[in-house]
Length: 207
Image (cartoon, rainbow, N blue to C red; front, top):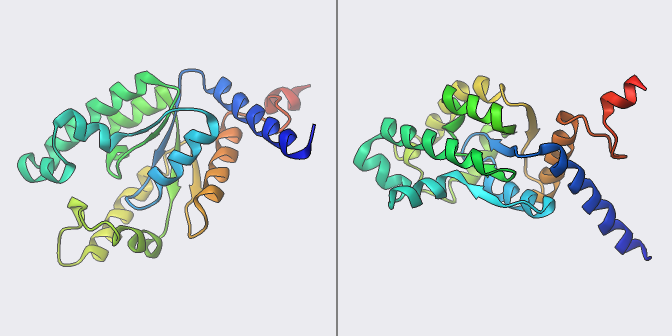
C-alpha cells in the first residue's frame, strides 16, 4: 500500500471514530454571522461523511421566503420563534453537521435542544475578521443601518458570553477553511474523549 492510500485510510478511520461516538447527535456550529459556520461546516461534513444542513436555508424553505423578507414582514421575534422550531426538528435528524444562524444560540430552548441532541462548537472570530466577511454579503437584516460595525460590536459583546456556553470553542481566523475544519475535528475529538489512536481517553487514563 502506498503512503497516499494509507493516509486516506487513516483519515477515514478517524472520521469513523467520531461519527460512531456521536451516535445520533449532530455537530452544531454556533457563532456570530461571518464566523465561517457554513464554509467550515460544508468541509467538515464532507470530511466526516455526514450531511451538511444550514438552518437558515431550512428556515427559508419552510417559510417560502428569504430571511430578509421574514424580518421585514413579520419582525425578528416571529423569525426567532420559527427558528427554534426548525432547529428542534433538524436536531432529530442527526448525525449531521448543522450550521445555525448567529442569533439561534441566544434561545435557551435551542441551547437545551442542542445540548440534548448535539455537540456544540463555537466558531469564535474577532470583529475585524467578521466585518471583512459580512461586507461581502450586504443583505444581512441586522446590519441594515448606518453603522453596521457598531452594530456588530454590540452583537459580539452581547452574544459572546452565551456562545461561550458551547461545548467547545475554535478560533476562526484568516487561514484556509480546511485549517479551521481540522481544529474543529480535534476539538470534537477532545470533547468526545477520543484519542488519536482510537481509544477513549478516560479509559486510557483509568487503565
